[in-house]
Amino acid sequence: MIPTFGQAGTQSEKVTLELRRKSGEILKTLLLRKGVNLWVALRRFGIPVGASCSGVGVCGKCAVRNLGGQGIELTPRTELEEQTLSRQGLASDLRLACLCRVNADTAIQADYW
Image (tube, rainbow, N blue to C red; front, side, top):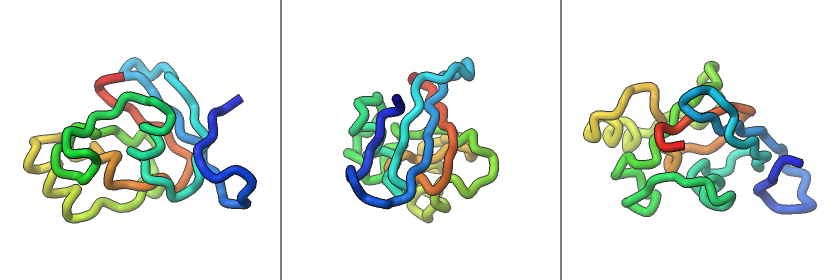
């Protein structure tokens, strides 16, 4: 059974999120309510995710790689996210989990899993 995050009993659309190790191995598969904040969802499931800024988008510790490939799986980058990635010297293909929401089925990877 896939763990689910979202309100029980609602008709909201669900999306599947695979968490992958650097090797590509699937660590866990989660079922989320579409539009949920990625950082909040990971923390609710007890998945380790960095955040020395408490999830306000300035530290860059929650950086993950979206493996979905279409670019629609997560909400578009904000100016704050672009600035933080640049200031922290992070790769341009990373996303800050605290600043994005999950819109479609996808897989993500973090260097620390």
